Length: 160
Image (cartoon, rainbow, N blue to C red; front, top):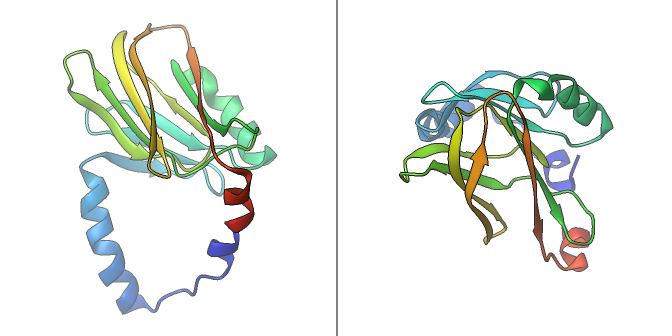
């Protein structure tokens, strides 16, 4: 758990609804969360009905995700070049025609999605820095894995 989340105060019921209502409408167009497997793991579905899962902070979450990984044909991982895993990475996946397929923020360093066979463009953004993979071939029945790396200064990890 990061220092930011441990210091948050729980809002009262009225404040919760006022704060969460805009967030529900904002994210409803990108995907629907269907379940939370373990604390921190988010499993959902895109507007088009494609299943995804993200999380993997800590060994318990990672193990839980690996047990279900075979259900997905695209596996993305996010890390700093120094080796630290990264969370809160914005993931945008478009098909070869530019149609948005996935647009969400990963809940951890692992992101799995089940896509129809085809070519996809992926933009992953961490802290305003984007990395891109163009024309990635994804096939039904086999998994493609890609690791996104960012040059993140070590002092950024000590500040968070």
